[in-house]
Image (cartoon, rainbow, N blue to C red; front, side, top):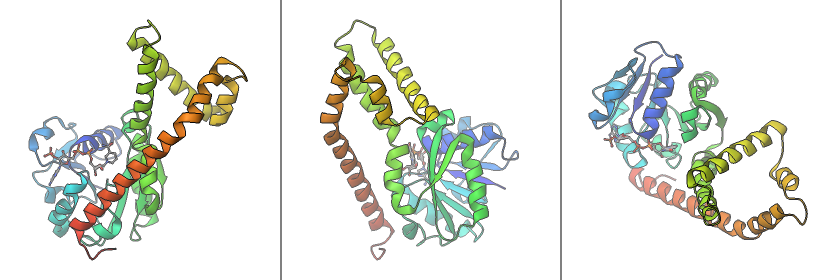
Length: 272
Ligand SMILES: NC(=O)c1ccc[n+]([C@@H]2O[C@H](COP(=O)([O-])OP(=O)(O)OC[C@H]3O[C@@H](n4cnc5c(N)ncnc54)[C@H](OP(=O)(O)O)[C@@H]3O)[C@@H](O)[C@H]2O)c1
């Protein structure tokens, strides 16, 4: 089985490096290409660099790791190389199957990895069009498990699903950045140490909840004893943060809708 990766940016590089290191593929069976060839100078040694997208598209499974604005033209460019057995993987959540199927009517999956794949802890989202068989799903999910867990969602949930696993590292980092910036105003502990203390506590809290099956409420109740110091802080969060959280999701989902509309225009106005 040959795997082709078109686009060697943030996601294409990550998937290539993880698959190359996984030893799931025989030497020479992982193909990669990119628009600007200088990016391809340091691909892992067991990876084959293709001269053009068409050569890469001769693989059995073809990952399209390009931005939404380039997706239509790349798919159109490789369409003549694709057969009914080719399994095409789009990494974009906003471009629908019905848009992609105007160009390629075969087996398509959408795959949304997270940056946490770098430490093999991605919660990769997948969804499939109707052409994909149970065996195809098994093969793809086995590859994706090279860098974490796999969660299948229906297409209509891929937007919010992406916010929860793919955008969430950015949300978490920005929330804790704000907390650390505020903490620094009240302490002489060096910044680097403040960040490390908070990060270690954040990861340990997640591990604690997952390993002991604790809910957020369980943790809050355990730490914030009534009338105590922690409760003063958790009260502020519960009183003032919900509005910010609502705005955050309203904004990201609106941006997602706009990206989808823009893609719809480029794929064809007759599409629903
Ligand atoms: N970043 C994330 O955390 C993340 C997470 C989940 C899903 N995604 C999705 O993954 C997709 C890729 O995102 P990314 O962050 O990896 O983008 P990126 O870093 O900008 O990489 C895109 C790559 O595609 C290449 N490319 C563009 N047009 C091409 C063409 N015609 N032929 C061959 N290669 C071409 C670009 O080459 P050049 O070097 O010439 O520009 C670039 O290396 C997007 O649809 C995004 O929504 C991203």
